[in-house]
Image (cartoon, rainbow, N blue to C red):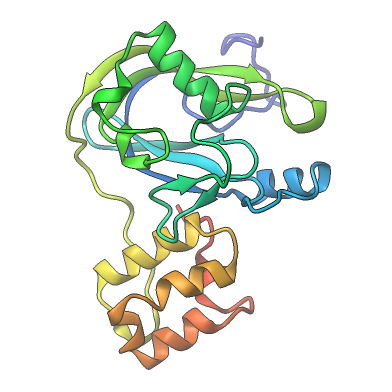
Length: 234
């Protein structure tokens, strides 16, 4: 591994935080385009599940500053709820230990000794909200044996606390919709696996159906539509 002292001007970094204390917030189940595309290309046919589904969290410092996001693949066959806050599987109740999310659970419970049963179940994302760890970058295998990549894994438990700090403000939107509605829609776009999924969930929000301009943006599946503009927004 290249250390900071050895890193040259043309060496690359992962862009992820490393060797930091951080607490988990905005936990959800969703997809990231790059990983989803890799899964679809190498593992066609996810059955009823959403291809490339991940457990995704935002990481905040003790001072309430967002320092990054991280996702762990949950394995095949899992289906998220429309708001991304839970998931279910047609034939299974437990996450498989070979998935990255399974490895996260094993690390936290078996190696770090955290009793996760007191916080909820792994299929409900909020079970992790407020948990703090010291995080380190580690190499891990990728789909179908491609070159290993690096991702964050916890190395020490810091307990649970309320995490201060809010997600970044949502961008301006059609019809001057309220900021709370926009924040919710941006978060929904991020965790939705496709535009249709996003639309079904968004149209259940009363403030959307009462705003003609916003509803038109939600229903627009083109590059200028709400989903395309906000998918993966940080």
